Amino acid sequence: MSDTKLPPPLPVRPVDGPGSPRDVPPLPGTLPVDPATLPGPIRDELEAPDPLAIDTSAGELKDGLNRCPKCGATDIRQRAGTDILVCMYCRNEWHGERVEEAFGFGEGIADLRGTVIASGARDIEADAASLMTFKCAGCGAEVTVNTESTMTARCHWCRHVFGVNEQIANGAVPDAVLPFYIRKDDAVARIRQFVDKRRMFALKAFKDEFTPENVVGVYLPYMIVDGSASASVAGKGEIKTRQYTRGTNNNKKTYYDADVYQIERHVEFTVDDLPLESSTERGNLDVNVNTNNIINTILPFDTKNAVKWNASYLSGFTSEKRNSNVQQLQPRLEDQLLSIARAQVDGSTRRYDRGVRWEQEQLDVHGTRWASMYLPVWLYSYHQPGKNGGLLHYIAVNGRTGETMGSVPVQQWKLLLAALTVGTFLEGIAIMILVGMS
Amino acid sequence: MSDDSGLWLLLAGPAGATALYWALYRFYRNTDKSHAFERETSIDAKPVTGSDAKVGNITGTQATRIQGDNVGAYRARVQRVASEAGRDVDDGAPGG
Image 1: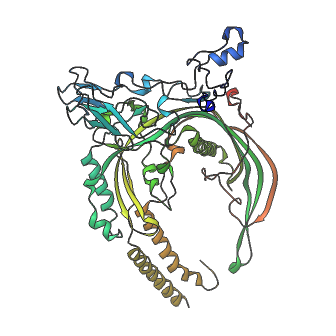
Image 2: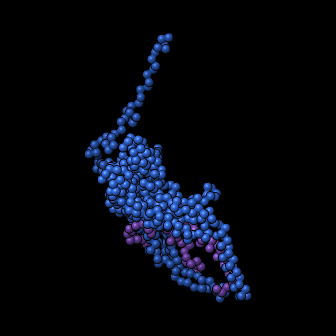
Image 3: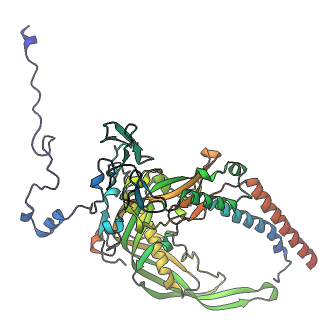
């Protein structure tokens, strides 16, 4: 009886001391030791700014409301064909700030060291959700924005327009946006022109269903990279020294003599605004499984004109969210830098008239600067049914330059028939010549 | 032009058919297109440096080009040699 009245045993004393969960983490930016007491190099490293060197977040837009500087209304749109924002209430117009000047992108590329990441290009946190909820400052209602595909929403009750302007951990908000210049009717005309030149062998179903008016304006996520690098390549080259023919009239053969050289080349260079697809799906350029190379082809954009992030530029357009971090894109960047280096040294191998076989290459990336950007693309898509879910064909129009590229599905039997017809015709001529000769 | 019997002319049919098929297919599907970042990116390069050393000669070959010519195939990767600077990219020392 008395046993049952005993209190339960005390819990084991939790572990404390250094490293235990009871330790309160230091405040951001504080150090447990005084840096002044440390050796110079260590102090310099501790006091150096964080790798996140460029903060591009827009503090004034944190509550999701982008207000007209004149009247305070939130219904703000982009004036089509310009970088100007216009208030739909009082018609006040103002210009977005260019990131090139605001954050110094494009300057000091040769002096870049290490990896500098703008705040919108930070790593995406694994548990970040796509749905963002705002409390409307006008009426208190809750407004949800799905950042997978859209960046603005309107409060159902008081008609305030909300935009995802705060740089959140889900990677949806980039550092900058390049607004659309090409209008929809212009994009429709370009797509129509592109397809009109490719009608004869186009898939019948595609022609029947062709409605370029269904084109959608999409902001696609890119990483814009500045970099400073040096590369070396080594290989063999051959210079022709003699050419001669041997044999009789009917059995003549040409022979060559050549000198063989071991060549080494080195080049230091900087690249400015190299665009890399920062969506894994769009970055897959395998032409056997998709037609993303079409979207890749309409690069480059005039990224120098990109403006500071403001979701008001995105109203009326859809968007795709970034899902690649800087680390994942590094191999592709290195691959492209090596290709650029190879193109740069090409001019110095002209004397090797029998060509050059590069055997080894080496790359040193001295420094890179990454900014995340939304670039405007008009996309017309057509799904061709087939094996493994078919193939999605795109016709893409660059929203700034109007460059158009597309993939039009072909009617295989028609194409084969045309090829066979021409082949038979050529064969007929060949036989006629042979008969004439004999 | 001059050869044994001219039978090679019979290849004209299949060759023409294949060439036309591929040309049209590419015109429609544009599978060979991509962003030419080598040309279209703004690149600022210092003068190319390097060395050339004669290592041998070839006599009497029938090949018109060097075997494995890849001088124009910028995107074809060859053996990657580790950078001399290694992980210490900060020193900025040019490799090679």
